[in-house]
Image 1: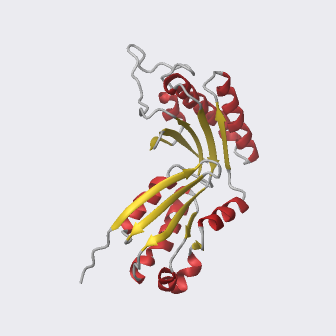
Image 2 (image 1 turned 90 degrees about the vertical axis):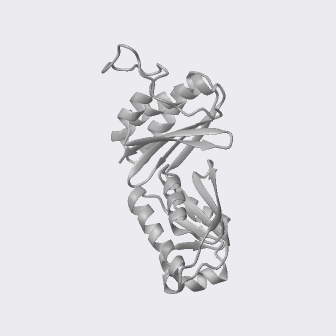
Length: 247
């Protein structure tokens, strides 16, 4: 007998101060949908992904058993820890012996404290839309690479930061946030600005194969060429453009 399991809602929030992606679930658990949502959040390489289970109804042993598998997969692929919070008594009961295989906390605040206690590799700075902010962003990225033992990535990471910040200043026009985080697999550089317009690589007539100078406003070519992955995440008021460099 098949059972329809529909997850009515997944809301993703991002805490820039702590570098955490928070997923709030409600309804009944749909493993493929949750897998996609957590994978998408982890692909941005935050300090951690926290999944709030408090809105879920009873989901059954076979489905609950998916949670430990999800944690392992995300950790192996992105190096990002997944923590769960707010599980009902039924979910805890259904986990049974697998309870010890997941990071499960009573409340969201407890999960955040646990993440911070682990000294996450996360740094964020709010900057004005001025050319001098590009230098400040590069300094934050370079200092982070040194602190995390990733000096060999510093030059490329600073280059990526320069282009992302320059694009934010030229095209978004307002203040922006530079974010840098590190996992055992990736170093991530991201910029959050107030423009909802997605970035795009502009083809320059007659410059095929030419080097695009830093600060040209067309530096997504540099971002793409300097990173392993890059992408854009829409936000309620703007977007985050990010790039990952394999460590």
